[in-house]
Image (cartoon, rainbow, N blue to C red; front, side, top):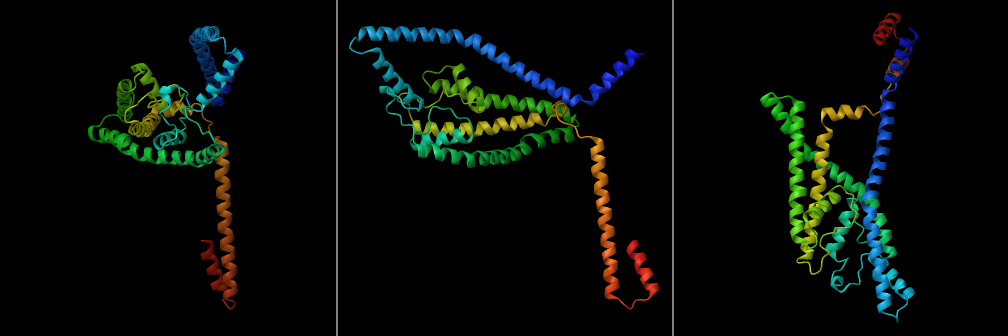
Length: 336
């Protein structure tokens, strides 16, 4: 008997705080996913980093032995300056000296990466004025970009998602939920094909040092706004039509970002995902809603009664010689 009562009370407690329990599991799952990613990245990349470090030490030792007139301290100071310039997008290599980072097309590409929060990091402002302007430009431009993308996606999704689903539901009588799922899958496949596979194949041809995997990696990192900056197109030696190429990449990034947002919005409108998201949201208490409704009704009734009383007083003032019978009739009308 006691066990059944305890079990029923535990069940009621869990059902009452179901949203909090789901949110706690969500936080725990996200933390475990972060730890899982750290373990995998560390186990995969750490051996390659160790090999690269050993190779660089050997090259440095061999260079110092072959050039005895140059001390190790002078070499390290020179390399530190070169690496500092490389972090700002300036290279001392002879095959990279012809590419300017701040011509108009490169600056346009940089502005698009700033506003879309991709931020490859291969080119950064050098002067204090450029850094200050980048802050002001981003503070205004990023909300402006969000507003622009939201407006564009809201207009596109009407013609791409809602009207086709409604047409098949009304015209052919299919279930709206099933049609929405099939439509979302097809739209996702078309978007991946047009903005990932096909551009990856094009980049693997245009970029000499990129294979298909590296090109697909660049497309995903860019359109997901991660922007690591390890692969940036149009930075190769003697790139043909570099200005036109940069403008094309800028247009590709903006169109691809819009397509990704349309697909995400389409999946978010699925009924199953809406139910799944509600599991982690805070539910409104019914008692609080009732209290708010009662208070609102009481406020409305009190305001109506006050208005009626003030109207009655105004009529008495404006008609001082009214008969008692007419005053009673007037009061009845006001009360009604």
